[in-house]
Image 1: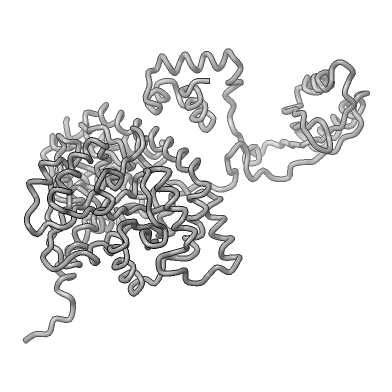
Image 2: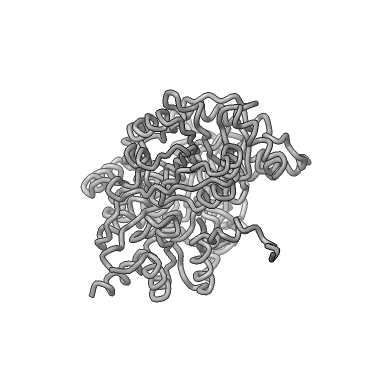
Length: 163
Length: 388
């Protein structure tokens, strides 16, 4: 990882819409340097996508998000890989992490309704042979996500002119 | 004889140009501003948290006059690690109410009536009035654009008389964004030593330089014993409202400054001092992140100004750009006033920082990129309208 690559990541992690031209200005370098670095990081899988943060609560469109703790039996020769793969192949599964602590996999799941999420857990997840137990936490409110505070609009509280 | 109720000295001092402009801007709540002299970041949470914790712990009493011992020790460590300068935290460091208080203290501690204080301008608004209040005669050195508003040895030499006593060295500079590197400082230090001057080195923007580390004049040979180094927490840690700064210098000067501080102020705010200990112990990463962010904006603003044909030298410190607007045949004041009225953008005229700021504007980039884009877009419209 070069210094320029790291600085590019720091900027676009906050705002992925900053274009190549503007990145070059902000970082004091040439557009071609930025373009090459971006391309390389995309190819290497360092940059995995350019998603948008959406607060669905403000849209009126129903969405339910749940965090599910899953305890599983690791498979011989495979560890957690095969069971994780079986789970992440479901499109409704947003995130799968292998974690340390009291359980093994942490899954983040998005569904339209509570019932839909519950249905997935009971009919698909829990029925996998390797799954020992699950605990589902429905998200009631997002205060902060990916470093962004959801509720408050940041306003400039400074005086307009100071020395 | 008529009795003069108010002090003639203070009545004779004109209010700062910032104040005047502020009054105009406050009539126009819809205006967007590039006019502030303070960071747009909130104080990092761990620093605020430490302030809150100190209150919860009931640390609500005076500290010693000079300030918390642990804070002075942290400042000594910081200056050692950053500048390679060693100060005795007990006798050579004083915690003040912002860097501003330290400026006032030094003048009052050292000036006898008629002593001359050399003040390079454009610079921060309070040196001249504070010098006058201390019965000094302020001697203005007009800095020049062709030198990127750095102070040259020749300019200093030319301003010196038998009464010259203190040189104010305000770098990195508000409002120009200019810095003085080691070479510049060495040239000036030679003149300072030759004429036995003392230096008020206002280094409040020391953490905000964009071409390598700031160099303090106090770190040059023979200079520490004739320098009062002023710094604080406002700019580096985004702590303007906490009002906390410090002065470091020879004990025999600090003793007198401490006396004034003791009688006028008592001690700097206790809560702020506890927060500042945390800032110095664990704040390096915050400072680095903010510096990087300012640097991005700085490049963006300089690029955009040049793109619209407004000449500006590359400012390497603080968070200001100082473009030249002479081509429009207006004073800075007229330009700023019309810009405000016609495009609703508040930018401070260079003359608020001294006559030599005529023909320039101080653009602050302590704003989000979105805000900068909007404001500079309006400035571009205005400039194109004037040229049409």
